[in-house]
Figure 1 (cartoon, rainbow, N blue to C red):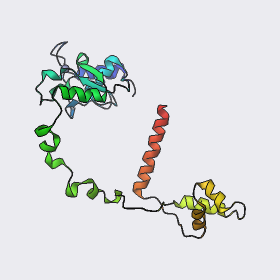
Figure 2 (figure 1 turned 180 degrees about the vertical axis):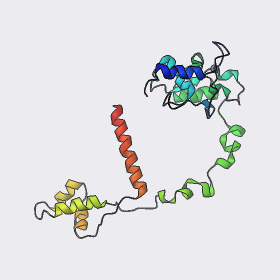
Figure 3 (figure 1 turned 90 degrees about the vertical axis):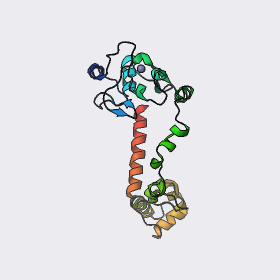
Figure 4 (figure 1 turned 45 degrees about the horizontal axis):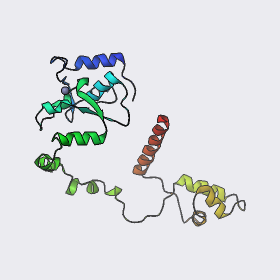
Length: 218
Ligand SMILES: [Zn+2]
C-alpha cells in the first residue's frame, strides 16, 4: 500500500470533525461504507477513514495485525455503529482478525439472534431464482468433462507431429505435458481445438494478473 502524502493527509484531517476536542471521537462526516468513513480514492487506496487515520499517524499496518480496531465503541449503545466513523488515532488499536472477533464478542457487538443479518434482512438471502446456482448456471460443474485444448495448442502439437520420424508420440507428449494417446488423437483429428469461452478467458486473465501482482510484491 503506497504511502499517503503530506497533502493527502492535510486534506484528510481537514474533512474529519475534531470539534469535540482531543479526547472525543473525531467522526467522519462524509460518505460511509458499512458505517465506516469512506475516503476519496485520491487520498488513499485503503478507503476506510479510520484506517487512513491510523496510517497517517503511525505508518505501515503490519500484515500480522491487519485490523484497525476501535476502543471507543464501548461508549456507544450496543446496537449503534456510530463509533465506526471515529478517526481519532488515540481510539484506535491494531489487532489480528481473531482479536477483532474476540473484542466484538466480549463487548456484545456480534450480531446474533434477532440482530443477525439472516433475521434482520431475510429478503437479502439469495434463494430460489436469486441463488448463485440459478444466476450462473454455466458455472456449475456438472460431472466429468474431458480437458479441452485451444486451437493454438492443437496447432503447436500438429506442427511438431509434422517433423515426421524425429520424435515419437510419447516424446511429443512429454514436450507438451500430455499423453501419447492425446498426441495420436490430435494427429487423427479426433481432438480439435476449442477457443476458450468468455468466462474461461476472464478466469485466465484474472489468474495471470494475480500472479503478476504477487511477483511484484516479492
Ligand atoms: Zn472514538
